[in-house]
Length: 114
Length: 112
Image 1 (cartoon, rainbow over the protein chains, first blue to last red):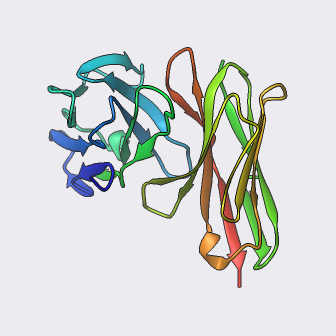
Image 2: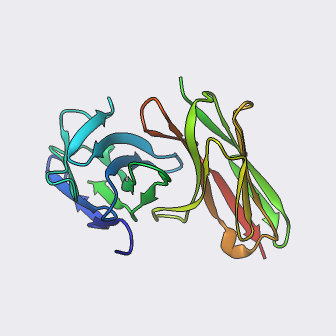
């Protein structure tokens, strides 16, 4: 396992379409986070899983956004009816539950809504 | 409100200089603080993690310090190189919600 993996790396979609991103965390990590980052800003928290349970969800996450982690391993983030304001880098991170809770990030998925 | 601030927003120095990046946070009840590097259009690479009980961490030419009582952390880069050019972000993990709260980053340019 070489780290957190995200797919796809880039996605261009037309406004109104649905998109789904995938994150594969480091295998022994219980915690999984989704963040969104726009140009020149730090990441913004979207949601957090501990194993398969979604424990926290930001108010930034409108009803068009949904995330799952069905078996406590990989996670998906779906955006329905995309809007131009959804264009951003979507970052996934994972960390252990105890001890050294260092967060490791994937390379991100760059979404462009045209 | 939990906020993280990084100063300066941008920094340009000649190669070889030692430099310090600053990070301040408003709520001292932290679990840990992490420094990251981000290259343009890329993801985040973890550089150093400091647990709340620690005062500093070192990795190669990097040294990060933590002063919880004053709500500050610094990232010291020794003998800077052009390859150090990137945006450096600090993020604080809080006990209360296990979310990383981020600064906006310092964009560092090392001139050859």
